[in-house]
Structures are given as structure tokens and as C-alpha cells.
Image (cartoon, rainbow over all chains, first blue to last red; front, side, top):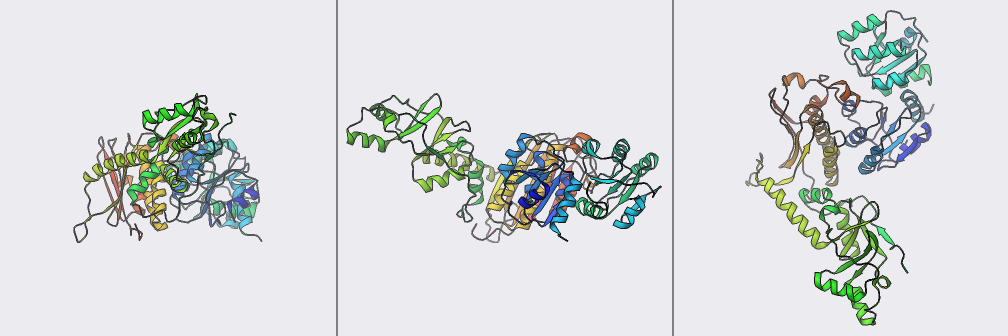
Length: 112
Length: 111
Length: 321
């Protein structure tokens, strides 16, 4: 499942289509603490987060994430789109909560 | 669903559960306490890695009856004491936020 | 007829996989330098009403080979020596330059990395490119000579720095080779830039096709150390170096110092305040995580004075470097 497909499932708005936008997502991380994200050793992960800051994108680049989805309909600082573009990192926002996003993404990744 | 029922269905460790019959009506997953204060619904179990006293205080404010600490993080004594005082249940799982949310999701459904 | 020139901004494409065998120092330089760092911004320009003859005279006087046509920063086109030669041959040297200037142009943007500009010199064989800023205003011109000059200056600086650096490993023949050496000043609480240095380091490593697992470890170490400098120190320097099979990332600051270094390197210990936590930092994993990804880890600190943290990760430099 790719970032584009996740965006459809979550009815998310894709603000930046980065390098990994068509890559298959192999792992999902739902953390708001960048230090925790830095501990994850998986590649090609999707980051679901409530934190809307440039550092989320920078952390995502460091760990090789496929993209970032900011939940809860949180308004993003304008700098985030610029940083996402600079780092070629896909960025989307959705209105649902992180819990709902996790459940929906999980269901889509594992169809019954 | 009752807290006890949820714990059994999802294999959650009960670190401090004084009343297992408390009703859980939803789930909120977040590590940002400001975000929890703004959005956590009443009656939800808070899924978070934030293992400290402030988390307990925030749950009291929003009416969340239980905290599920993820990544198997240790619960400091001050947090235990605060939870006991405020009558907030403390649960724990080895899973991360995503896996824990999905497990709860299978049992409780969407919010 | 005055129309806006049809300009093609050099599209932003990912650099080629086999982008030559430049040493890392050079590659890092041309990625770091932007067009605006290298271009000539003291421009000789003419308005649309100037004649071709006037442009020719200007070229002769100033010894330049291209003159942009602009008015108040609004860019209309370019007159090159070729255009002058054709005008002389065709007998229309007295015409206004607007009639004969080149309007189908490739332009560069001032905040593009130099690496992009180089590709376009290669592809288009023009001697020069006009440079526009984000508001489409003419801010400079860049030609090969500018690039050569800038690279010479920057490389001299890098060489001076290299000569001052103690390199640990020397191979059996007594040679050492340094692939990259770069220092980034990090300011206290500069959250806008926090992590930028680590992002750049990772980009360079990806360019040179180091193995992904090694890239991940170096990037994580650099990022954690950079954030630490930003959040916990009074500011400092993050430096990195790859030499003889070792990547070294060093964070140096002048204060406030760590009282208990052993405590600080444990999982989950932090001195961060609430505000820092709200920004997503400060969960106390930083130094422990750096240690985890490093092959060698050293930390020296004294409360009231500075701290130095060094992470070493062994690397095999990819073939062809």
C-alpha cells in the first residue's frame, strides 16, 4: 500500500508528493516523540503523528520514512510544506484522530 | 466494554487497576499532552508512551479512566502514586502505539 | 513588441545516479552552494530602448559577453555576442535591442544548488544563464568563470581546514584520504534549523551511495547530536568527517556541561523542560541512541564548561569514490 492509497483511505489531503509517494509502506509508526521515531529501525515506514512541526519531516528523512500524515485536522505551519519539498518527503493531513487513522490503515493493510 | 474485558481481549498488563468494571467507551492515541487535553473524549483509554505524572493529571481533566503505556515502558513511582490518588487505571503493553491501537480497534471499533 | 521572455526554469530533477566520481568534498560543496552564492550580481544591463550598437559598446568596455535587458528588475531578454555579430552582418546594429534580443531562455533560480546549475551548463552549452529570484526578478548572471572562481575559493578554505584536522587512521603506506569534512554551527533553541545539518549529511551519503544501513546510523547519530546541541547546550558545532573507513560525528559545545555523564547516557533520562517536550524533543533517548548506533562512542563533559560527544561508525567507502 502506498502513501497515495493511505490518503484515500483516510480522506487525507496530500500537500507534498515526495520521492517515496509510490513506494510500498512496510511499517507504520504512530508516535509524537521524535526520539521514539529515531529508535525505529524499519525502512519504508509511514509516520502518523499529531505533531505539526518541521522536525517531524526532518526526523522522517533521517529514518527514511515514506511519508508523514498529520492527524486531527491540525493546521500546519507554512514552513512545513517548504521543508517537505526540500527533503522530497510526502506530507498529508487528515481530519480523523490518530487512533482512527491507525485502525483504518491497519484494516486497509490487512483486508479480511 | 469494561476495563477488565478490554484487558483480557487485548492481552494488556494491569499495572494499577482498582476497578475493573469501569466502562471504556473509546480510545485516544497521542503523546502530546496538549493534544490530549484538546481532543481526548470522555471515557477513553489513552494510549501513550508518556510515562509520567503529568499524563495522569491530564487524564483527570479530560475524564479518561485509563492510561495504556506502550513500548513496555517502566512506570515511575510518582506516576503510580498519582494514578492511585486520581483513580486512573494504569495498563501496559510491549506493543508500540500503532500495534496497540490496532488491537484495541479490533475490539472497540472506530471512535 | 515587448513580451515577457519565454523562460524555462531549469526543472528540479534528482541528480543522476552516476553523478561522476567527484570526491565527496566537491560534491558536498556543489550541493551546499546555491546559485546566488556564486553568481555575479553587479550587473550591467540595458533597457529595451538601447540600440544593439550601444550594447556592443558596453560589451567592449566592460569585457562581458552577455547583457541582460531589464527595467526595474523586470527581465525581458538577453543580448549575446552572437546576437551582435548577426546584427553587424545583417545591417541592423542600430535597431533597439528589444527587437533582436534572445527571449527563449533558460534561466536559473537563485536558491538552486550549484549542482543543478552545472548540469545545465553541460546540457545547454550556453555561456551564461540569467538568474531570477522567486518573484521572477533578475538578480544576477552566472557563467562558467563565476563557478570556477567560487569553487577555487571554497576548496582553498576546505583545504585549510583539513590541514588543521588531526586524522586518526593512516593506511599502511602512510597515506590518508579524507572524503568529507564539514562543520555546522548550531544555535541554542534554533528550532527552525534543528536537524537541517543531519538532513544534509544524509543527502550527501545517499548521493555517494553508501549502504543504507550505514547511512541510517550516521544520520541518526548526527541528528541526535545536532538536536542535543540545539536543545541542551548554549550552542556549539557539529562536525563530521569520513576518513579511512571511519565516519566521525562530533558535537562540541561550550556549556552548560553535564554533571553526570553516565546518567545522561541512559535511556529515558532527560533534563528537558515542558516546552521542549511539547516540540517533540526531550524524551531522553538522545545520547543513548547515539551510543546504540555507534561503533565507538566518547563523551567528555564538565558541569560549568563544555561537552564533546564523538560518535564513530565504521564505513566501507563505496567503490568508485
